[in-house]
Amino acid sequence: MNKIVKIIIALVICLSVGYSASIVTRPSVESWYPTLIKPFFNPPNWIFMPMWTLLYILMAVAAGLVWDKIKEQSEEVKKALLFFIIQLTLNAIWSYLFFGLKNPLLALVEIALLLLMIYETYLKFIKINKTAGYLLIPYMAWVSFALILNASIWWLNK
Figure 1 (cartoon, rainbow, N blue to C red):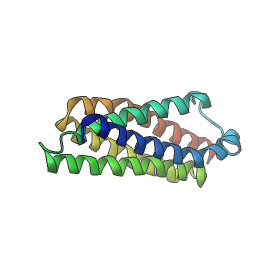
Figure 2 (tube, one colour; figure 1 turned 135 degrees about the vertical axis):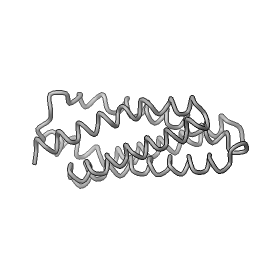
Figure 3 (tube, rainbow, N blue to C red; figure 1 turned 90 degrees about the horizontal axis):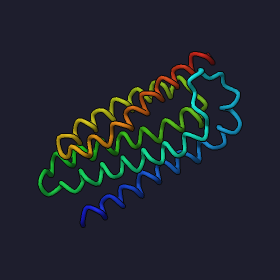
């Protein structure tokens, strides 16, 4: 299997996770989320979909680039992709906790764990393929911002 096919498979997986999270998110964005007190730096709702789409694409390319090194660095790649799958799963769970269960505190605890897993994934990816590691930096930055936003929303609405 060539690199492009691996990237496409990773893209389908990442975008599927994003789409499934949006199914949980959408009803609450229209009903519950507008009722919350939000901090002054809360971005407009329209920014989230294009931002997450871009981040899922960057994640997929990163995963595909790492996966492409499986023959040369089998154990390292398997471990890196395991961390990638764990963080991707945590990514989806956050939407369920915050928007599905409407529980910003539980989501806050979970997003802190997510950020740590993204960082671990970054450390593993950068050792295998520098470009793959760099592609995760915008994701780490956005989730760092999301953690601060989540914490602020929890604090303002407790």
